[in-house]
Image (cartoon, rainbow, N blue to C red):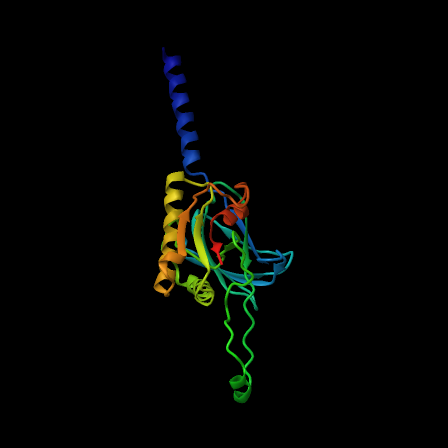
Length: 257
């Protein structure tokens, strides 16, 4: 009987020690590497990065070079606010959640759109002779063609439109204003992460928010349609973070012109 009691006590002590070890196990640190590429050519760009870790309340700053991403280490699951800037390109700001419990290495790519060239200031007498031309508009439009709005941003998992989105939406509004017969659909898309019903709801409301912005900008409502597709029309396989980012998008589709 005494031997049985000792055996039970030994088992309990071993189980308690194993449980304590598992609870105090240090989380996996994540080596986070990030680089920037041209949106059209995918060529790597020398970029400056500013990364704010919201939970850890830390700021990381550095630069990448072609073939050499900017790397820093996260010690806990965190929400990151990433700002990327490259001379000659529009600045990009993105928000993401990175889990240190699931991966030791995390690679992220920011796709940047080349900025429109600054207008050349001519002498007053020359300006007076030239006819004004519409600038900052989408060109070469064709029916059924989809244009991705890469510089439209929402708060994480919400349909709150961020102010950084206004320049590209103003460009779209100007395109509609200067092309009276143009009719478009605003289409919202998500990746396949999370509840499909919530993704569908999110995509619909993001498309609706953009449509309302265009209406407030003076575009007639009968020229606009909006629809959310959730994860039903992926632009790429949902097999990597880079591809999932391609699927989390808002587009406008030309219906008539």
